[in-house]
Length: 217
Image (cartoon, rainbow, N blue to C red; front, side, top):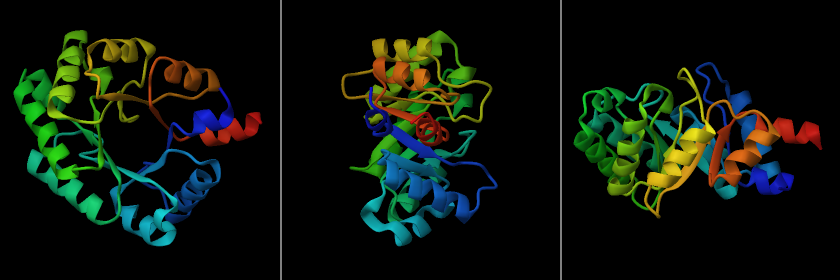
């Protein structure tokens, strides 16, 4: 794959708690220059990015991040606020406690409520695979599909593990035809990027792809 083909699938990411406006501005400038799919940033920076860059950039943010145990009602408000401030895509974290309690109907209901709040905007569902059994991952593929979400996403990047080819292969076998896949967490090399894209990922969340591909060139 060419460098640009890869970059067109990248959610260029900066989600560290201590990131400054200078960090965010650098991220956005790199995203525009390299034509990445989006920037994925903390909700507190949405409005400033939107006011600074307008339609030059596709803004993605995170909801219930990184632990996912906010209530459904709080997450719905987060989604509505993010979109009102200029965000186009939202990556939500599921309530993993609900998964461990076997409350998959509750998980599906939450995803459906957030998709309703997002409307035509893209909703990606972070399931945090490092904490899940194979059976739980399969059930979550069904929840994401039934609830009408746009993507299933492997990881926050803040858990004990990140994206694996095994999980993406499992997702591909069990998601519906309208659900896309996003790999995130630990995707560090060009081989990793090409491997996940070849396995069917539409997006990859990473903070390192732009710099890595520039240095390679």
